[in-house]
Structures are given as C-alpha cells and as structure tokens.
Image 1 (cartoon, rainbow, N blue to C red):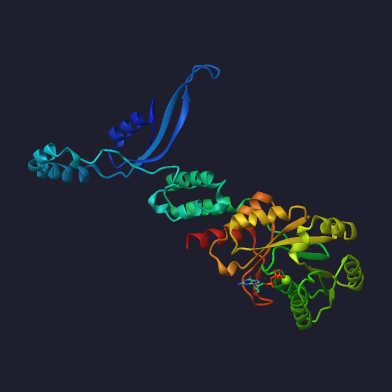
Image 2: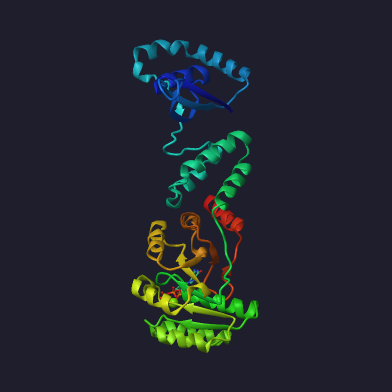
Length: 355
Ligand SMILES: Nc1nc2c(ncn2[C@@H]2O[C@H](COP(=O)(O)OP(=O)(O)OP(=O)(O)O)[C@@H](O)[C@H]2O)c(=O)[nH]1
Ligand SMILES: [Mg+2]
C-alpha cells in the first residue's frame, strides 16, 4: 500500500494530481483545507490537502497485461469513439470521510463507528484506526489500540459504604440485582446483611424481596415513609452491609430526594443507578440526566446477556465520569452478576460489537 499526501489549490486539481501519480485505483483517505505560507498568520494561502493510497503491484505484473489488453482493444477503438457515453468517467474510487469508510480489512469497524454512544468520538476513533492500520498493517494491533482507547475512560468501583442503594427506571432489574448482591455479601463475603425496601407501590415488589430475604436468610424491613426508613436503619444497625431497594420513581421527585438527604447521610451510602443495556442509548442518556440530582457512586448495567451492543457503558461512563460497579448477565440469583475490570469491560464491548 502506497500512501501519498498532495497539496493543491483546489480539490479538482488535487484529484487530477492523484490520478496522474497513483492512477485510477487510488483511494482518497482524507481531504481538508489548510493554510500555507504567510507571515504571523497573515497572507497565508488557502490550499487543499488530500491523502490518497493505492495498492502496490510489481511493475511487470501490470505492464504485461496492459500491453495485451491495449492490443486487444484496438479493433473496438472506433466503436468507443462513435459512442462516447460508453467511456466511464476516470475518477478515483473515493472513500468518503463523512461516511467513515475504512480500509477493507477494517470494514467491520464501520458499524461500531456509527454507534449513537460514539457520536462525539467517531472521528477520533476513525483517525486512530486508519493511522494504526497504515503504521502497522496489522489488524490485530489495530484492535489492541482500539481496545486501549475504549478502556481509558471506563472506570470500575467497589462499594465502600455500609449502605448500598439501587435506583433506576422500572423493570430494569433493581430488585433482582439487590438479591444477587445480598447473596454475594452474605454467602461469598460472609458478612451480615440486611435489606430495606422503600418500594411500597406494589405488594408484589415487597413479596419478591421477602422471598429472596427468606432464601438467603437475612432480615428485611419495609419502609413506607422516611420515619420508617429511620427505624429500619436502627433495627439493622448490627449489619455490616444494608442493601436498600427503591421504586425508581421516588427519585424523580425532587422533594423526596431533598427530604431523604435531610434524614439520611448519603456520605455513608453508595447509590447506584441501575440501567438496562437493552435500552436505547439516547433514552439512557435522558434517564441519567433525570437522576443527576442524586449523589450517584456509579452504574449497575443489567441484561448484558440480552444484547450484543454494550456501547452504552462506554458512552455513559465517558460522559459522566462515573464508574461501573457491576454488570448482570441473566435472571439467575445469585450467579448472574460479574465485577469485570475496565480492560475486561472494554474488551467485551469491542469484541461483541465486532462479532
Ligand atoms: N435477561 C436478564 N433479565 C434480568 C436481569 N436482571 C433482571 N432481569 C429480569 O428483569 C425483570 C425485572 O426485574 P426486577 O428485578 O423486578 O426489576 P426492578 O427494576 O426491580 O422492577 P420494578 O421494581 O418494577 O421497578 C425480571 O424478569 C428479572 O428476572 C439480567 O441481568 N438479565
Ligand atoms: Mg423492584
């Protein structure tokens, strides 16, 4: 692969030079306006920079068939001359930057670059892919560089507070995740665990958590209001870890959050926003914005088993700089929960996307 940088007065002039230098099979990788010359930023000339590439072939391989074809074409020359519309315009194959076409070997990345969660990153990632590819000519190294870039903004966290509260929209898996966490702290970490639920909108919600509490053999308190929440804290004061389930909608009520802040010291609580990876990225962005009055410690992403598109993890962690606490990977309690490292998260995102 030969790559050439051409500077000309206009795009058409640059294209003409590309045709002359690299032939009709040249691929345009990038075009941009640049300024040349001048003094202290004055009198600089506007020019066009064009980067093009072409596959290199041994010269003999090209010349022989060309001679042969030219000879064969002689009789048809007159036919073409009398029918000029049969002549194809001599323009190079253009790989447009706007549509983010990539070298053939990297074409599987094109879908990734179109991800809504990458809307602000696509250009930088495109540059990274193309430059790494032309530097190394090795798709494996391109993948490694891509994963490293995706890893950089993703952080993971552990819960350090005695209270762990889950919040988020309805049906995302808050209660199921809380049960998985309860089992993890009780059975794996051998800690004393208590549960409080403030989700009293549905009887079945309390019953769902009571069932898990009975199976894991840990106490459950139901708090219908903030006084009962205070009482529940007193009742469970012996527990190492207290897990708090919520009805997400409480957190959309600014008054509720303000009152809760007055009665409950959030410095002793890790509040995690639970989001389902099956939701659209734009919806997740809006949900996250609605919860921004809550002092969040990070995200719990659920239903990773139901989608190959994990880019929301990258988009949201980069945007908010909040870390990932855990991922859930199925409906089974307690096993379907994982605590990956940042590198493992980014590898999952990229590998699933390229599959
Ligand atoms: N596939 C899959 N399903 C999950 C996962 N986590 C939870 N679920 C399922 O999602 C559904 C809702 O789970 P819940 O735990 O009741 O969700 P919630 O957020 O507490 O719901 P509300 O309390 O009604 O707001 C249940 O059918 C769960 O089994 C997961 O990681 N993967
Ligand atoms: Mg629930």
